[in-house]
Image 1: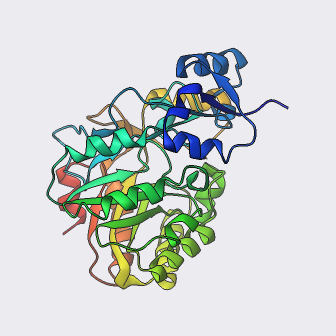
Image 2 (image 1 turned 90 degrees about the vertical axis):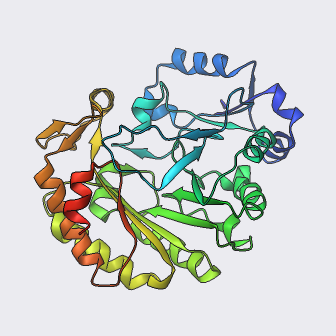
Image 3 (image 1 turned 45 degrees about the horizontal axis):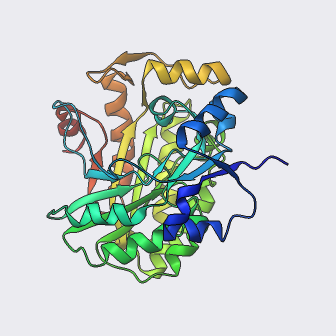
Length: 335
């Protein structure tokens, strides 16, 4: 049977690579990342089926990346992100990674010691560094054990804040670690109907809530991410029910912050999705924003945010922010 795991020989030169090889039972060897991508191209399976393929290799470039936002957008909390892994095995229809990468496979870079040397040179003051922007930070943690490495490093970097972001229920590694104030975990939460229609292969809402609750009980603060908010038929009731379910299940004293964002996508993403599946995700009337992405009209976005924020504020005064929104929208909804 063909292995869906691939490695390059040079991972054996790195401790993380050797550790991963002790776990993998069956894999194929390629000479380079380029050869691996060439194999995928020859298979012509399409983006979604490529998500079943994995490469472990050595990264040549930088691990720490900064956000580059249009000046019209309000500053977001996540100032930097780590790219030790590219892509995600989950199959969310709206995911920007569909248009960011030319393939659907997941690539993990084992030379994590280079990542930490790079971070040693980075000085910050309460800057947030996110894991899970170009990947899901926990889904492969049982293979990579990356959460252990990151926590072991960031526990000594009180000048930096580390965020794990996920839609996974794979939290065993985090539960085995001590908790530090500058490290927290964020879950993207969506109504069940959104998960069912647009977030394929992810953990269910109940599984995400259970995972978040266990982490809170262990001592972690949790970030809530409701992004993207999608204008489904029963939008108001679906998202208010979601907020009530979250607030009823979680310890509100250990909610670090809440991030909201509306559906947004490039025309390239839309075209790629429609090549592989039928979906009603793009049926709404949208407008092209200043960043070239399609969004709901401002009035709809304001209404969506107002509905959710009104429900959130019934439970307390939380730190709420908006993702990829201009100053006008922030002022309108975060009064």
